[in-house]
Length: 387
Image (cartoon, rainbow, N blue to C red; front, side, top):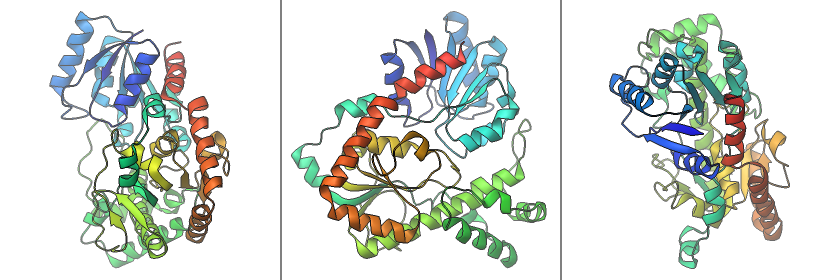
């Protein structure tokens, strides 16, 4: 099979590239800068030129990119894509309904929301792990000393990403309502209550102050969905991560790898940004406990961080996500927490039970190797997409 792989800079691209080659795919690449996901005419011309002069079975990208779908629809060429980000604004594009599409979404509830737009061409597919990660991670003794810690977290607090923080003049009654939803959601794992809590009246009022700009004319403006995911959901993520990191740092030694401002959590050690290929796997391997806190708009699915931690052989302690129980044995291959108190108790327990923690990490790595590699997922995807 010949695939034209359109790369735009996702950290998942190299792992998926290796998996496609492992499957025996012949790959051509477009690495031109993508200036606009919807109307980049130069990007469209390059895809068209490649399809004119070279024979490809399909075009592939990480995440749904409307400009690629437009060209593939014109050329009657299958466009296969796999989302790794949620929320993904581009899924609201009317191009999602194009007949060329084969769109794979990793969060089942996200899939259920968008599937009706293009029922025969939108699929559910959980994420996976790069097999190279499984084969290559072996920290040296010097690196083990460098990255060794009791607890680590690699990722943003979302303080610098949260659109809600940029709203200056939101009235107190609306801000109080949002604060109440955020507090309620922070106490619930496994169910996203935000969207169901938003009335039409609230959405109309909130939209007056939350200027997300004019969406492209060929987008469906789902006001409730945008407010729920891009504003309140990510605000909940920010507050949850700050509270969680502060609570942990008050009781345990903890490292975080991030570009976020942590001046408000003085007891945590900020190690800066971790390179996803050269550093991150070794951090996971050398940390006694690796923490996952899922971005709240991911309602049911398993984020990439989970697979990467377990694939590197790290012990994973994650918030509860409904799909975790479908794909892993909780308590045997990873451990989940369901409240702040539960989190602190489990940290204390697994720091004190070294052998048990090591066995869980080993079983988790084996689960990834046997059931959750990118190559396995991509083989299934292309069988579904091009049947």
